Image (cartoon, rainbow, N blue to C red; front, side):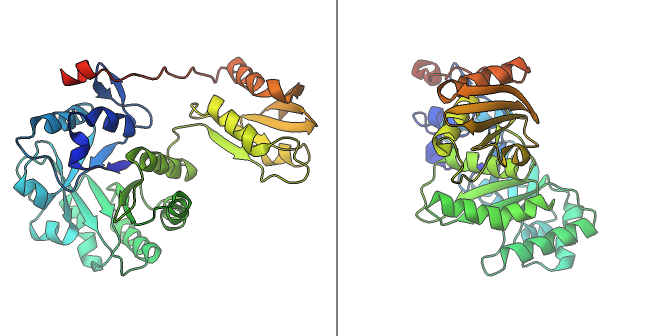
Length: 337
């Protein structure tokens, strides 16, 4: 997952909040990576060379393995040591992949308008990544599939990141866009990651877009960063408030990557629908819940008020639990230092 950020976010006062938005943990104000930290950041413009505070904030992320991807034309005006220079494929071919001063690797952008021969030249350039950013006049799906067919035909193994620009300001609309336009490609093995960039008046937080990206990858079975939840759609047989109960279970167990929890409203279809889950929470009688490990009932007729805690204890008994990390407070004095 690559996150798009802007220079003002790196200011001394904003940096601690940016670290949190990008999913870093912090110790005495210094960031370090966690399981769902953004792998790289994309910046269209960099802080000025004399903006030492912002540059320091950026350097601290780079020192713990965060890549910084910047358009080559920006790096030519405003160099940054160890940055990744992003060029259009056409430009990269014309320059034979020559990097701006300070850049250490090349990334190339393909928009789908290139001819087959030009796309095949990616192999000779040997970039560290490809970004697939489809021209707005082309079909996202058709142009992307064509690109990946050409890459595969030429044995190009370079990681490809879908660069999706959105003008949506509604989270459900964005989820639908990503699922249909990018998720369908990722599930077919076409691509390795996602960069979501806001365009226009959209105002999603960096944290929201990062989590959306990781959720997309997990839904495509590419990268597991949190608990997987399976739920029935609810019907007249449902024996508890499905939405409220699912929210409670997510709050209690949502920090367990690699674990799948199924929440089923009744016994009729529940066991069949949750067959692949590690643990099941199934309504059986009014006010009562059965707990499953795999396909086996291990606890019966637990009162609703006690069932979520009982599920936590069940997960612990099978060695699949870990405690939530304590929330870390930002120490302003440490950050300033």
